[in-house]
Length: 92
Image 1 (spheres, rainbow, N blue to C red):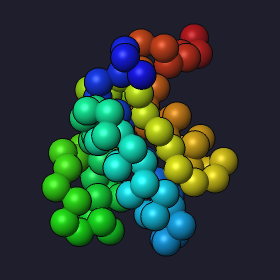
Image 2: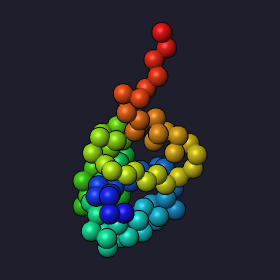
Image 3: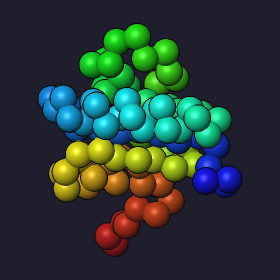
Image 4: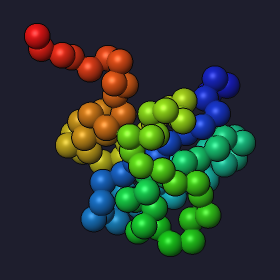
């Protein structure tokens, strides 16, 4: 993880298990001196987190790594939000 300094965390809303996992991840990343940035939607359901937050679309610009906690839908949704515009396909 030496190359990753800013780690974005995204999670599926409405799941206590996801929130618990995110809290464990935050502790793990903190212990390694990494900067944790929460998706603003998940941050709303984690009062008192004390972390920087941002929209998922911005996370792709400021984070070196994004970790998604949830199911396939969460992962696919995050991938759509995080993808760089320069790699978007354009049909002509």
